[in-house]
Length: 258
Image 1: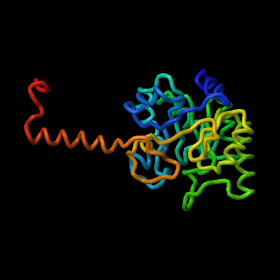
Image 2: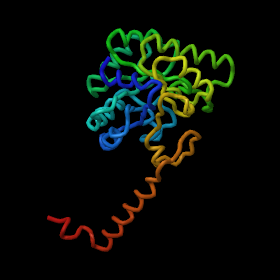
Image 3: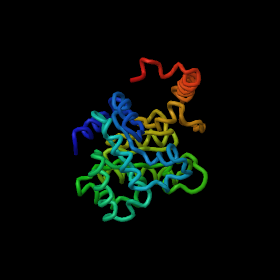
Image 4: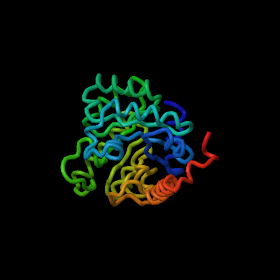
């Protein structure tokens, strides 16, 4: 376990953990100043490639974007999503996790699921691979309309049990995606490791959002996303000014020419 992960663990019940997504060097350089964890999420499938499912994201795509992100990360813990169909067995998971870490220099990988993937997580941990868990809505296996988790007694018991099992398998934290408020609080209270919420209330030990969503690049309304800035508006202003100056022949002036 590296020192960055020890630092994340030490924040449990003390201070909130900040986690944000990045898919490139330029963005990660900014996020690194304010984040505890930078996640190279397979959400890049919808954010960058307009896929309607993360299942289309490949291992090579994750590795290439992670290599770029790594160049901008100095202090934060860097976690990379293992994409769909990259951890169907213990041997496949280990081979692909090693490949991600070798080429991206990531600190950890993230896997979606609970009891079904325990043996895989244990195998990765046995081989010194740091793992972050992910419960609730699981985009890689989601079928049909997305809805929050924890509505029924059965679902609540299963999610709490899965969280405890994941902790026992050796994950250092768990993302709780769109889990009902009281259940998120119960899970967080019952775990010794931190929970990172997304749409799962303030009761989690930290929060994660897709950076493009919080700065207003993504126009799709999502219940748990607060738009902290309208970057599209300011981006368009800059492009409009450039276009106007080129047409008016005021750019490039002598100052910007050789």
